[in-house]
Length: 532
Ligand code: NAD
Image 1 (cartoon, rainbow, N blue to C red):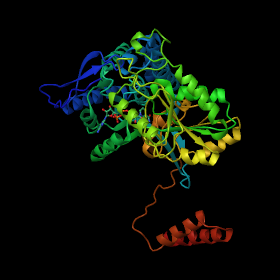
Image 2 (cartoon, protein in one colour; image 1 turned 45 degrees about the vertical axis):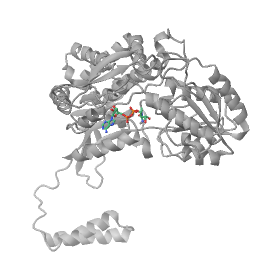
Image 3 (cartoon, helix red, strand yellow; image 1 turned 60 degrees about the vertical axis):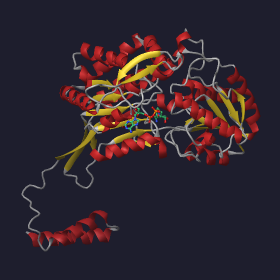
Image 4 (cartoon, helix red, strand yellow; image 1 turned 180 degrees about the vertical axis):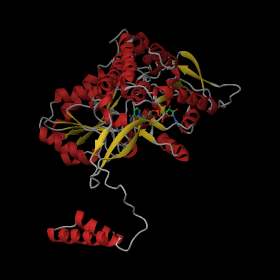
């Protein structure tokens, strides 16, 4: 997709974004760029729709989510085609990365959402005469800012918990995958109207960074941003002006450690999946492989052989399974990969598969690449690549693997391959990341009961699981009387005996030793006698 340059945001003459199919460069059409006024208007409409939705029961919300799930299952192939057209990914990648996780999130939320959001009784501590509970109230309108790598999933996955928690949602899709916005809006409209609800509950808007910034500052109650660390910082700055809370799901540079006792068949197969799925355009792609010296040559030989066999082509010609690797969604990403690979090769790395743009194809294609003899002086181990490049570093042992895995500003996912379960646990415990998977990669995302998110520049806050559902709520504490022992008592005016009374209460509750406590009880009795 190409954006029209220098298009001013003007309510009188709405400018547009031009959309292209990245695999063929075919022009798909134009979508509107929402002005700040138009964004505020959409938020206003969402707020109106939320008034009723926020009072619905969990059973009613589940009904809408079940209808969405039924719709997706019925229309899965069409949705895959829409995603492939917009992003250039193969239809198998669309099925695995778009349909599967969205269906699983719907299943989880339908099955567990009510329990996760049920009022939670907590212990009242020393205030034994009181009861305390946490209630999970809707926030109101939630704003979502999406990247381009999963056009369907990136919209649906934040909307599902937001709706379950009783919110309305305004989603701004990426300027690089905007053509599908109208199709996805139509899906929500159809389901919401069929279930008897206002379609303004979920609204998808289009535009670039200015439209995104307008959403951040539109008065929404919370922003869920998924994107690059650089833009995450800008979103945080803009959100600071209105003190709008943000959840930042930023990039990743996931390490994959392959120990000398790894099952190599499994490690090779999973590494291929972790690197080449969705053409590597995944936040939890396996971007850095640390392979132990003892198995390095064999591992490299096998992945080189596998990578050279991969077939690449446009999804428009994919009848299902014709291609292994698709196109790059964003043209700039090709330049980033080109620069990183050139820097690595210049500093001594070698390509044993691919290594350049695929000139045989008209669209934005980078050949499936395997880069070996990589070290930490190269930019490719520090910057996100987000492409079909397997980057392999040779390591001596566990300590070196862990040290290098942690030598990175990102900290999203990670994985380790070993047949020794204790060794796997030991290494996992020392990797600094939001998630570690032993003997697999990226699967933590599919386990919708578990929180997902990063550390350091990979962001903060969590999506998925009860943490993700509760992140869409005002976690409200309510305190009630268990025993009405305060009746008739007044603290004011403060009396001379008040301070020693409090002192003795503190000693009685928190002091050490029986004699301290006995003395404190006597002191309390004296103070109460003086205060009567
Ligand atoms: P991006 O940061 O360029 O854009 C993300 C979204 O934010 C887009 O909709 C964009 O229009 C909008 N935006 C950009 N600047 C903005 C601003 N100043 N204010 C408000 N909105 C703004 O990211 P991208 O290039 O679309 O996506 C790729 C990045 O997303 C990668 O870094 C990738 O790792 C990351 N990502 C992270 C996760 C995760 O869960 N951690 C998932 C997918 C992608």
